[in-house]
Length: 617
Image 1 (cartoon, rainbow, N blue to C red):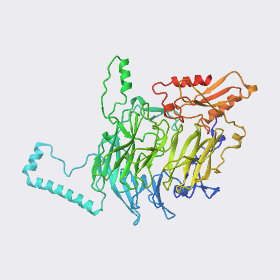
Image 2: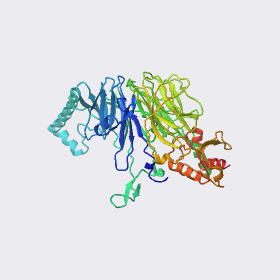
Image 3: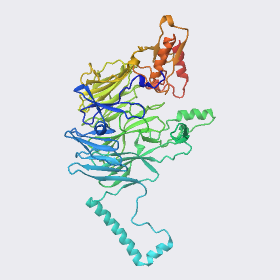
Image 4: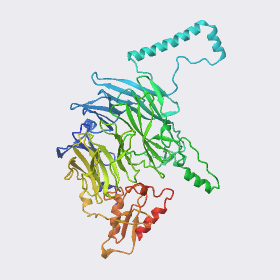
C-alpha cells in the first residue's frame, strides 16, 4: 500500500485540447528521470491514440492560449509564441528570451510580453516591434541640475559652458521627438518607483493602454532557509524558502494605467472601493483589548489591498479586458482576507476610475482557494462571476452599475465555469445531487434550470473543446483511479472511455467502495458526511478506527478517487481485519458551503472534536 504507486497504474495527467482544437491531448507520467509521454487523438476517431514527441509537442502543449473572433489562435509554450491561422501553425519566436501572455489586438495583429516590454507582431509584414516598456528607476533628465555653488558660478560666468549645456538639452529634446515621429526606435519607457517590482502587466486589445500592477520589493531574510539533507553534492545544503507566516508583512499593490498613445502614466486610486478604509477587525481587536483591560478605539485607515494572484483564483486571470479593449475587469482582495472585489475601469474615460461592481465580504475569511472565476459575456457589457454570498458558491450575471442576477441557487457548489464559444451557455462542475458527487452541467447564459450532462456518480471534471462540440472528461470512483472519457457537449449520456491505465495487479484485489453516510451533530444545521468501511459480520472486532484527513480545507468523503488513495487502501485493509473505519469531513472541510468552511473561525479544534464525538456515537 505504501509502495511507489506505479503498481496501481499511471493515470492520465493534464488533459487538454490542442491549440487548433482538432485533437484531445494528455500526458502519461513516466518513471523518475524520464520525460512524461504525450498522446493525442482525433475526437472523431477516439480509438486511434497516437504518441507524439519532439517538435510536435510544441503544437499540442499550451502555457496560455487566446482565440480570436475569427478562430485564429495564439499561444505560448516553453517561453515561445505560436500562431495558428488558416490551418497553418507558425512559431513566431525561437530564442533565449521568454515570451508570455500572448494575445490578439482588435486589428488582428499579435502581441506578447517579453521581460519588461510589450512586443507587437505585424502579421502582414512579419515584423515585430517594441510598443511599450517600463523600468523601475528614476526618469532621466537631459542634464542633471548643478548642486554646488562653484558649478553654478561657472555656468553663470562662462558663456561657452552655458551655451553648450543648452545645446545638449535642445539636441536631446529634438532627438526624442524625432524618435517618436519616425518610429525607427522604440518609444521611451514608463518609469516606475525604484523600490517596486512587477506583479502583473496586461496589454489592452485596443493597443492603446497598458495596465501595470506593482508591489514593493520583498526583502529576503537570509535566515529563511531549510536544510536539504539528501543532495547530489553529498553535502547538507541550506535552501532559501518563503518567509515564515509570523514574519509576513502586509502587502498592497499599486495599479497604473499607461496611455501608450499619449505616453501618460496614471496611478489608479483604490479609495473608491467600498470598505477601503473600514475597520473590519474591530470586533476582534475590541475583544483582545478587553482581555488586556484596555479600551480599543476604532479608526478608519486605508487597508492593504492587492490583485488576487497569490493563491488559486479558479481558472480566471485576475485581469480581463473586454474584447473591445476599452473596459477591463479586475479581481482584488484584502490582505486581512475579509474582502474580495470585482472592479471595472473604462480606460477611454477622460479620468479613468476604478468602479466596484461586486464586494464579497466575509466576517471569517473570503475563500481565495476556489470559486473566483469571472469574466465578460461574449459581445456583451455584462460580467459573470462566482460568489459565496448566499452561503454556497453560485453563478451570477451583472451589467456594470446594475443589480446582479443569480443564475444558480441551492445547497450545492458551482465551480470551474467555462463560457461556451458562442457565448450562449455556461458549463460548470457541481455537487448538486450529492455533496460528494461532482457532475458536469450546462446552463443558458440567460438562466433557467441547469442540465446535468454526465452521470458517473463520482468525481468528474472537464475540458470544453475550442469549438464547443466536445467534452474531454476525467472521472473516477472511490475504488477506481481517474480515466479519460470523451462525449459530445450536447449529449454526454454515453461517453467513450479513452484510457485504461489501471494495472491488473490493482484490479485483482477487488477493492470495495465504502458506504457513504451522514449523521447530525448537535448545534449544527448541516449533517456530517463520511466514508464508512464495515467489516464482514463474522470478522468484526470491538474496535473502531477514525481516519482524519489533513489540510483543513479539503474534502475527502466524496465518491471519487481520493488524494489519500494510500489511506483508502489502508482503511480497506483495516476493515478486513475486523475494524469499523470511518473517514469524516468534519467542519472546515471543503464541499459543503461557506458556513461549514468557516465554522472553525477563532474556534479551531472544538467543532472538529464535536464532529468526531458524533461520529463515535
